[in-house]
Image (cartoon, rainbow, N blue to C red; front, side, top):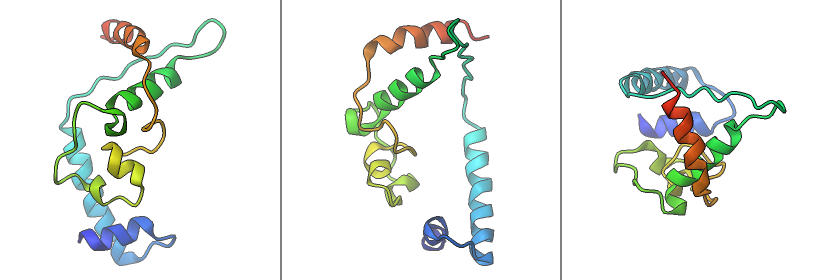
Length: 119
């Protein structure tokens, strides 16, 4: 099934048999992720209309990326090991943006503030 799914993900067309396999995998992924604890953070807009969302996102990704000495390697069974993108395979994240950047440690303070003010 994995070879068929890889073909489905990299193809520009969607064949009916691949769609069925993708649907099965999507259900498994949704079930797996749905069982994980997570926290939504409300990142308010600043008075100037800007937001710290991008700053928090960029630095969080850079912090966790294995390309920038992230703290946790993906498991041997992680599907990202088979991704076409070298950045996904090497970073251990399903992302290719910001994975090769260095994080700014000062972002941890506003992140902590957001966490502490989330109910």
